[in-house]
Length: 110
Length: 115
Image (cartoon, rainbow over all chains, first blue to last red):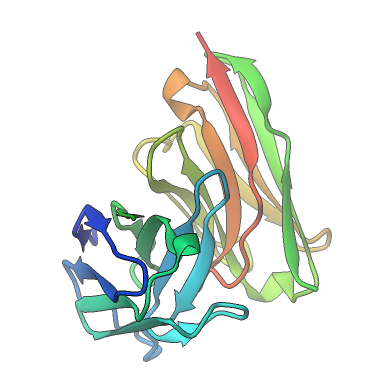
């Protein structure tokens, strides 16, 4: 089974400063169809999770451009260029290449 | 507008059964694999079960294998999760989503299993 390891578990941030979350996979996430099904989700306090980034780097509709995703193979990163107060929450990476796996989550707090 | 709407959650006693539904609209449901994922109170996300676009294959998490059954009715654009022999640890909010890209994701339905 694929294991996704996120770091850090907790990320204290400063408003206006950048932030970065790592997601490492135990296996390459390149699917046989050539796509890397690595997504990032945001869970704000009291809300359902919503997808921010799909297929490593594609921002979903309505997601601010301060969010970006990158990476290849087994190492992936979610970056926030300038943290805003509304970015507080828990972030999960998730892979759909080899069945499904979710990372353990990273709590972003001011 | 594409959406997934879950229903069927509620409070049930340990050992009983519950059937969740997920109604899809606004996208070609029969072209997508589907899965259920859950989130226990204060915990992370855990996938539960997935099914191929045509229903020909199912895959389950170890924690629910043998108790839960995923199915779909492509003529009704609906996904199901039959949950038998429920346990207190199955208490969670259950979401349905498309596989493998999670392009569409529902708002969830809450299942509470009491002892």
